[in-house]
Image (tube, rainbow, N blue to C red; front, side):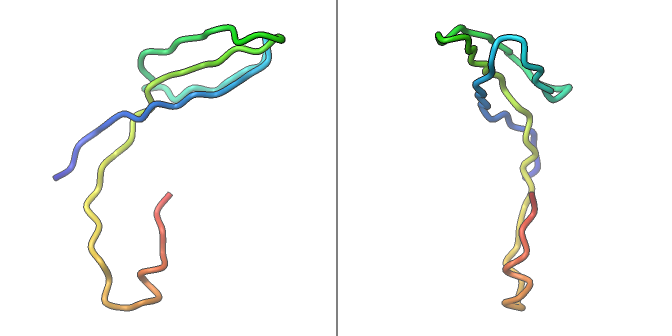
Length: 65
């Protein structure tokens, strides 16, 4: 079954730093955490794909990022 899901992503940045968010990012929040830092949290889209186990052991070591 194929579908689109979202994963929570959270990054710590200094005030004024630029953060490239994915175009499809949802529910972006920015919260101060002290000492000149903010925490940026958002939902990042991820694609679910079906993966079969290959018969060749070398092919089994290949990963998709």
